[in-house]
Image (cartoon, rainbow, N blue to C red):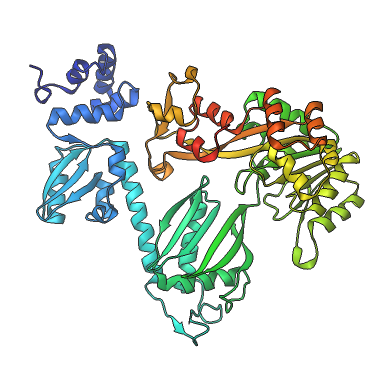
Length: 570
């Protein structure tokens, strides 16, 4: 009977049909030269995976294996049993602890010096699990990173001084520049930590939400909110006051909504922060939107267009006049698509002007105007002024009322190319949305060339991407065609690179409605969106759900993302 505990590592891998004899011999030859461990060489060669090596090594030594997914789920309070310096230096992670024993994950369970040191530090008996090197490194960085962050918050809050005002004012925190410097003020440090974490994690929004007993700080990363810290509720007034000072708001007003803005400079990078404060029953909720204004690196080829949608979209944005409308909810990437389109068509021979609120990115060679409603610089008044500036192409940040829509459409009918956005659910409903705003159907049908609805779906993290077999329910939930049910599908296991979500980055899915003659006729006749949709699909329009399924089949995203971002086509 084959007993792995009495065999060499290579022989076990051969017996389990994990490794071929030729690969083993190649690895042994390398070992004679490098003197490295055989397992490490085999992983470097790609002959075995780290998980396969861990399983085999554990069976050889009679220990239990543990893998990255489980390493990442350990409670941070348990991990803190060992200091970061010791854990990092010796590559050891505490998994569990009782009154008499401590369970640790190690790469080499026969490292007696480290085991003795753990016993000395904890005064507990050590039980060892076998883990892979890269999995341990990722888990240690993840957990101790969270511990460091928690420590920074605690340190920032350790010297709080709250000054109680009268009954109407409540607790006021003295954070004026005259009394406390930025380096000394704990709330200043705490707000800086929140902003730094958001920028590091590529967040687009920061939510500071008061709860009955604590504050929830959440970041919107790749379109989904993720909690990052929970400061005590006693720190809410200090955080709010600091952000109000930065945003030039009224720090004494706590009963009404307020809006403001400030900028963060990091080297050559400038990030514009838009702040909204809303009074709730537990205190003021703060939402900050982060916009990196200094650079725009995207172009049409990197947005996620498949070839059959990229070609018609590029053709329509190159037309000399008419309207191109991008629709979708807030955060669906509409502005990014518009900027990429302008980048594609700009030239020295064209005068391109934009009217935006806010200007999200700065583009060279394009005239960008920031709307300022408070001083009368509205979309309508700005567009009228631009008409006297001899423009060729106009980008209007959003069509939100009849006045803006009317000017934009008339602009498109007089030999200009107009780009804009509308909040709508899909491409056909964008047409009816314009009509609902008050634009006559004949003007909509005559001016609009193309409507594109879009959504952003999260892409599978390339660092932890792994094959998996979907269930019948997964296929049925999205009405997957039979021919796609036998393909290979993937999802992310979760790792340090993706904050254990299994996703990193986003890509677009699109629904392109070209207003050719038969569609224009339906618009002229003021037909409802369902009739327009049916005709568009008959003409070859791919719906948002179908576009998402295409990304799913290509191994770019997951079933859950498609269900989250699209509705079923009825």
